[in-house]
Image (cartoon, rainbow, N blue to C red; front, top):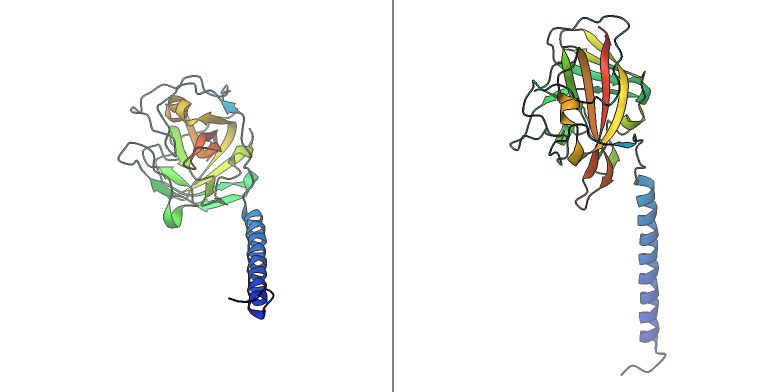
Length: 238
């Protein structure tokens, strides 16, 4: 038995104190790292009620079963364009610019998954916007659909600031035929995914329009956003 106050016991206490000090330092370092890398909340419009609810619920909005649907209760009254714009022929988008939120990115096409839900960008292209290749190309008659992430693996992604856009802001889309379609935003809205207004977003329009979609709102228990933010814009220049 080691006598009380022996060198061996004193050494054990010093090791224990040293271990506690190391753990405390590590804990402080982890807290500082967490605070330094935490992404703040993105700007978001007020939560709206879906005008034509679908059974959504996916990470991105679901797509309507028919392309011939008529729009119902558009989220903002659409005034007639002050100047007529001529629809453009089909040409896939190659790049997207939104000057008001400093977005300038290449665009790639994306389709549907096996469950009929619009796939989300992933892998090396996770932070790029994607054009839904089942929608019109930007500048054609109808609503072209472009989607992207608000965050990716805890970091701000391409559409982190999307909810801060306002009517009058512009969206520029370069097309593979060398033309650029310019759209003017007339509304930005946020919808619960289980009340997503599928027809208003994907349904037929009077002329060339664009929809830009990302996620928003609180997170569920699996870390998925409960809402979608949608930007509505119409062609004003080509």
